[in-house]
Length: 435
Image (cartoon, rainbow, N blue to C red; front, side):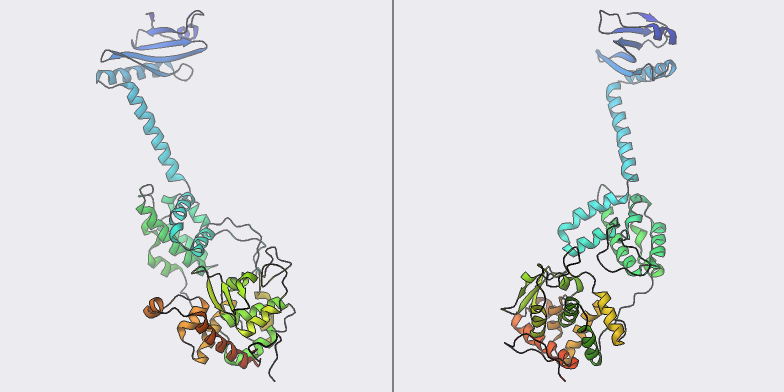
């Protein structure tokens, strides 16, 4: 065993003989320290005996370690030997601890979007398709071409989801101050969306606290109810609704619209109480003219079947069958009607009627149904509302015939107020205005 006091120059000159695989040069100052030379590589190593077994540990390349540090490391390793510890095991544990620390840092500094995706994946089986879509939209990157009309000041592409910026922060950075700042900013532009996002964010943070992988990272107190009360304006329910005396004027100007698809859509929206997208997504395969029914893709329950009333059937029968959609649009990429608000607002302006949203037409159906003393549960079932009473929820399953009896009465009364004659059974298509 060759020993010399190691110096930088001696280390530089030391090489492995051509006829051997490796050679060692041992230090006299730190007796367990050596230079091991192989073909083209030299490294500091430590070697000692533990329980009569040879223990060798590579400290590092001579180009990366200076001599003083290598000697200090050799003395530290000798201390472990003297204590009965295996330096190799200690090295494995130390590297594992370092990797765990780096992994923890990566995990805690990763954007909360990663955790949000895990949350959605874990909850998807419990959510309806609509709830899943609502959560996905909250972090949508935006930038997609708009398929509906633009509001004043908006561009031609969709905006990023309301929670995208907030969830781009690490999870442990989403505290009460961050949420309060988010609410203040969004309350000015989209308060209703901010309220919905706040509720879903609170559920997300509570879920994180229940998960072993995220426990301790989420600030579950970040979404205190009082914060929403302080930062968001008080919600005011919309009450726009067509009055009985406005029906004649509304029908007159909606029926004058140049586009028959838009005209029929708006009238059927009022006469069925359907949601705007439920009706816009109606396909010809969903309409049964023989048995007078149509199936609507319900955002709550998946689908519901409602009566096909005489006037609505006539309106649909007169529409062009360009593709699979009842309310087709050759100019739309989807092939169906996308933005009926524009012609509706035009008709309202021409008629001199007050502003009325498309959802206001749905509200109008439920309100006008009371004029024929229709049971609340019947109109609710037609509209796709959840049952609001115990009896309705568990004991009322009305057949389509019973719904049809009342729905025809509702349609007939609305048309009577509008001065339009309701088609009779077996009557050929063609709508006549009552003088």
